[in-house]
Length: 319
Image (spheres, rainbow, N blue to C red):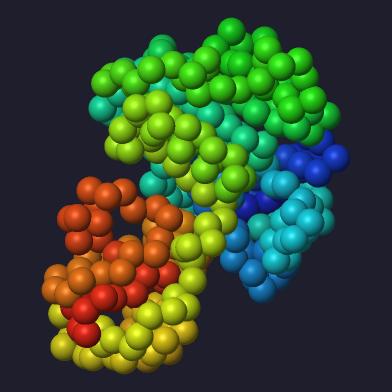
């Protein structure tokens, strides 16, 4: 969890749709906010610090006078989105410094951004950055209808943006073959949105020949197979820096056991989707259950303590 919280004030608030609120945050002192790269998110202390939630920054990264968040009111909310919707101009909000595991690839010269619903938020910041840099990009914004789409006033007149509505004509529906085309070694795909939407886009792209390393993703919630330490037998975690050993029983997460023992372990979302708890495995065989690490990062020994477990009896971590 962040050990440095920033105080901000809600300087502007408007309802972009019936279920999406857009909040602009500034520093109480009028100072510049910390810089961030497109795709970044912040932790937010919601409802008097009872909850910590993560929200993408969707404003232009070059504008450090304010941060912009857009929050969808989830019907199955754990309380975060509804608390954010209750905010009004003048309210104070504590946030973390921006963090980013969903940035623009420096290996690509062409960028295809695919947003589903509220997943447009980090991709909108990417579009701002790519536009400012004169980069080659397209943003495909998929939503149920115009009425449920935020930011249309700044997107629909941009010739690089394609709008796809479920209730629109068939010819404007999003397809991987028609809108992304065949794989190209200089092109990266970025996907964000509801889980089912992301699964469809990613599986269709891979089925069309796009390699996994060309597809960058950010989820707002864990998939069914990730984000839970349930299942799997007990194992022992050994900390390389202290020599401490801790038994992780079935149903427990490595992170929870370490925190209960007073270990200063990094964390934030506790769902395997933000990357803040990532540490390096020095020995043992991990059982990866996150939805953020790439195959290459897993091969390099990276590990999420909040959701992943071990296949081996002992897992030694660089902590």
